Length: 229
Image 1: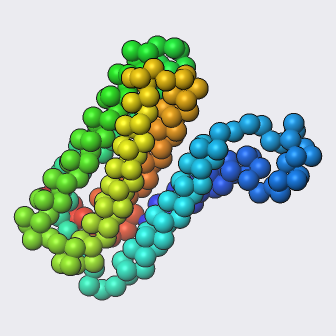
Image 2 (image 1 turned 30 degrees about the horizontal axis):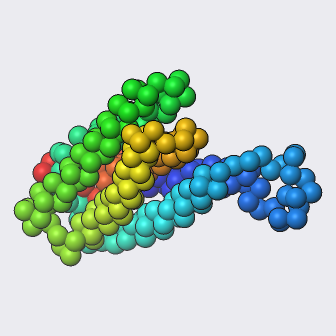
Image 3 (image 1 turned 90 degrees about the horizontal axis):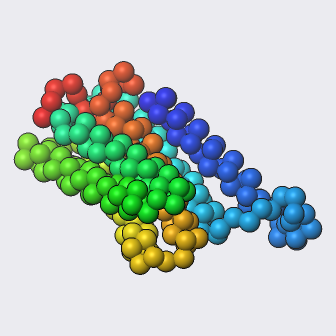
């Protein structure tokens, strides 16, 4: 539990540090005076994404803090561990790697690698979401609902919030794919793909923290027990 919060806190420190380097904490008139030295040009969309990641990280930290407090109650009862979670995690890892491959293809000017990486990352991410829905169905079929226990409620909460962030990423991904296929301006394509890659790596990092909380008994009393579903 502590490790999860420390990891997310480090992520928040990295995000805030990046934002401070973009002079987000500097007054506009100060930027105007010292622009050549401290204000390199950064796309507003990139700064906006990092602000969003900071807000999203704060949200996950709050949820995990609530989970840590609820965990101490005597009635805490873990639910069985869906086997499919491991496969879903592998799909998200592969999606992040594919997105990194698309960025490498973009930087090399390899349009084929760029397209293959984008398509693969989208399909793998859609597979991850579909797998998460199957996990929900398995739990429902086994009579584990959000109202069944605190552990079940946190399971649905963590996976639902993360899934919504993933679904939002697919919206941005579809716009990037559309621009790439239309042959839009390279600078616009480059920015969109790089933003998608940053977001995908972030989603993977957050999911690994959540996955550890879901299945790792070494971090305390996990949401899922060692017994498979």
